[in-house]
Amino acid sequence: MACHDCDALFRAPQLHEGDSIVCPHCAAKLSTHRPHGIRRAAAFSLSAASFFVVANIFPFIELKAGGQISRIVLAESVSALNQHGSPGLAAAVAIFILGAPSLMIVGMLYLMLPLQFGRRLPGAIGVCRAVFGTDTWNMIEVFLLGVLVSLLKLGDIATVTLGISFWAFACLIVCLIAAVASIDKHELWNQLEEARG
Image (tube, rainbow, N blue to C red):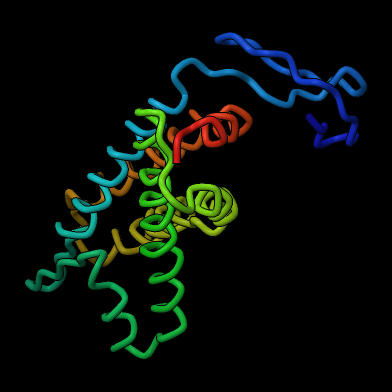
């Protein structure tokens, strides 16, 4: 194993549940064997997929102002932004809010579900690199924070009601974070190498 801090090479010991690997040269924590990490990541990924579907079907927020009611659905926000003269913002929402999370969820399920049965699907190594490489492009937390700030400002001029989609989106964020946090990358790579293709 190579230390990501000091580049020292050493033979990694076999880990048991709860054990950690610490670099013998610089004492950097490199890996922790989390019990049932792959199983938990698969469960959180399935939950995230369910919440993602709900978040794109039901109304995100409802605005009441001057006797008019407007409902915003997350999946329709891209076309609405484009129609209102913001193609750049529409593209950003499509890529970072809809595209990146869906690719991450699909990638996690593609990796984790077969590993439950000791199998590896074709291209799993490339998918694993893509999932962890695009993790930084997943901006749904930033989007939700921006929505909350906007809602505080809209509260003065309209009555705002948070829809089912809003809460599903918040749960989606929690599930995605928990799925990634459940995975020990060292253990994942070992399981991918040992799994039957």
